[in-house]
Image 1 (cartoon, rainbow, N blue to C red):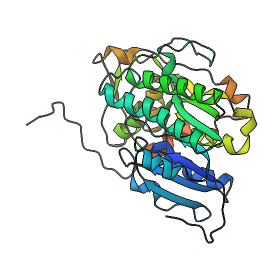
Image 2: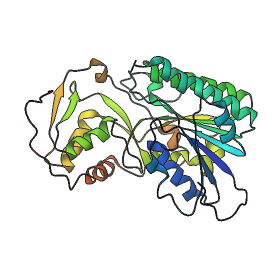
Image 3: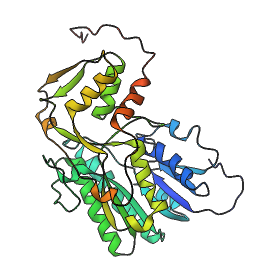
Image 4: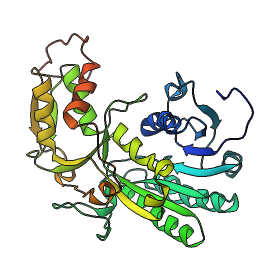
Length: 329
């Protein structure tokens, strides 16, 4: 797939996992910053969607390779002529998840390590990695990038190990930037509804109650998908400001109950209930975004607007009364 009208050589940026939630937005925003850039996508369709490469901007140049970052042949082919790699490909889990540990470690840690080695061999100039604020571990106070990392759960641990591998590659000459992403939410060309904020919008949209674990006062670092994409595009507009640094990519820290209240203020029929199902969800995760704001970035899309936009997607859904008892038969 290539939208270019001629064969002239342009700068090539490789986006791994470009068919996913964040990737579907990012590959559009990159060409909005610079239409002469060729965006090459490497994705294995594990969690991506064909919709990500449908209705792409006509101003851009796009190439697609179906392949896996664990496949050396696929990565070598994908890296040909590439100047910058934006590495999104990962197995995403909740911060305290301990399921499928070997698979998550293999893809997130070792997949990144092998990709880094391939980048060094291919003389790639810059590597941008999307990590997670979960690497800090639970915290009642907002943590900054200088805080010690105490990741819990295989997802956070695998991302932290990938960060360490990137720091080693940096000492070998690879320019890098690490973004520690908060909980992603908001509307994108490919939207996932697994994170709690998006799921709240979905549940309210179809007339189901919102489940809140504990008392709802636990905090989460939220990041709108388009705010996140804009920050990553700093690699194109302000490379010197972000090279060799790690940033918390967070819009705001907010409690779960506050998000539920915002949903209810937008959709008056939304109701929520409290449950004690999983004690791990009662923990707070909170991160400071001051370092990223110092580069000139600031979140443009507010939580109120982002949730309103999501809820509007369900405006034509007629909801039936939710039954008191669910039959499993």
